[in-house]
Amino acid sequence: MTAIFVSQSLAGGDFTVKSGAAEIDVRIDSDVTAPQEAGLRKWIETDARAVATYYGRFPVPRVLLRIHLHGGAGIGDGVTYEGRLIRISVGRATSAAGFADDWMLTHEMFHLGFPDLDDRYNWMGEGLSTYLEPIARVRIGAISQDELWRGMLEGLPAGLPARGARGLDNTHTWGATYWGGAMFWFLADIAIREKTQNSKSLDDAIRAILRAGGDGSAHWELNDLLEKGDRATGTTVLEDLHRAMGLQPKAVDLDGLWRRLGVELKNKRVTYDDRAPLATIRRSMAGTSR
Ligand SMILES: [Zn+2]
Image (cartoon, rainbow, N blue to C red; front, side, top):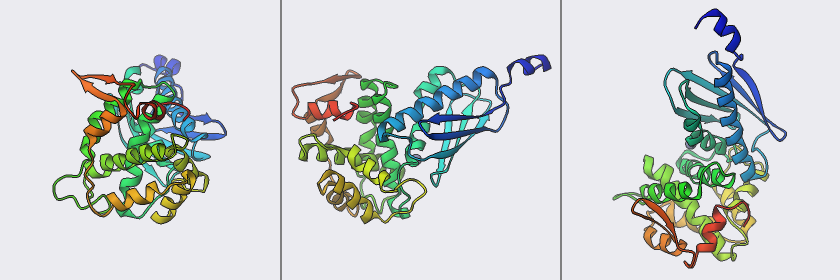
């Protein structure tokens, strides 16, 4: 890079993104050009908006977002620390489409809104981030309905218990942690909606946990979390489902569930059946309201 080009194009590299009253302080470990900064800004603003729209506000008042910029393309290595710091790697050559396709920053931002639990329950936070990331993004139009359901149809089978699995609290594989955890929240969402005639949902439980101080800086006991979430929906879905999936594997008839929701992959295309018994619930899951 020539000196003259640098002086015209360097934008500094540190900036703050606001989400309502919350501030995301962005620190980049090397210089960026103005177009690179614009791309980063748009990506962070969009994902913050997805998460803030889900909760009704950004989950923490302030977070430091440290970006490691490398020479390639794409986004990776996201880690969130105690509700106050997210580290993530971004390639300088990441295209606008690459930023738009990224799920990782939204996933990390959801960790800001969920308390730390004892290690054996890590699947709860990982599963929640996995489940809510596409839900939050479809609700702001960042991904399509087809992308949401394709991700669920293709991803959730990895959360079915493997042979020899001993329940999510005792099985610390990748599949159990991320997709087994996502399965828990997916089943919980459907069960809450079924039991309340779709007047309550997982949204109510998760927002209540955050409102009670359960953000990423807090350490909670599992029972408090289940109780707080269940109280918000007037059900015992979370407690019952944890009893069913935590200490032993739970068989899930995923194909039957897709039929009841009225969604399937046909010749690699997502198709919908609006006469399916849970079609209204399926539409509500992707909607901004119940
Ligand atoms: Zn995670």
